[in-house]
Image 1: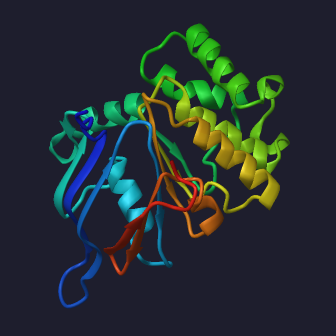
Image 2: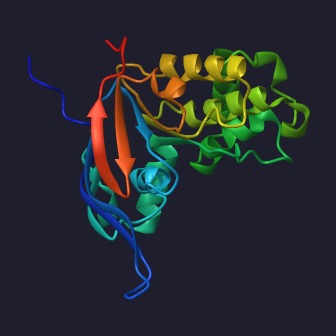
Length: 234
């Protein structure tokens, strides 16, 4: 059986900041790919380049060298307008600090990307409510972020990343601020988000989080140190 083409393919990816003699190299010629239906964990010590790789893969930052391909689109060749459209329609982000708008309710936070993409508010709310139900927070639709627990805010952030049938979900330390039990429930939710039409990439320092993945990529000093399948992965 032929192997399906990668959803995300990073080739020769490099990222440098500043100029010599004070140049800092965050990533050295990284090769990295993710298939639909796959959860990939990116691990490594602080400063290894994990978050930089995630932000570049999601089109939030441009590489200094190399290519980033999502489906049939090469991100670094897109205009800022085209790139913003790709992010809205195809990429969901879950940030460490949740990044929820405090003046919007849970359902409004989730529906905001759809409305920004031109969807009618009523339909955006309907789809937002549907995904909120899927993450177990249907009864918290009208709650504001300050009225939600850390675990609930993270679920809202994940729902916002999933709404609109996005193909790729990128999560940066999604359990970092949560207790063990809540973190496990969040990882179960992310695991269930890996469908034949979606992939999930998780940046983490926690081996317990990485154990949920199909594949673990370890970075060190901006290089890929190892790639392995955790025990129990299919």
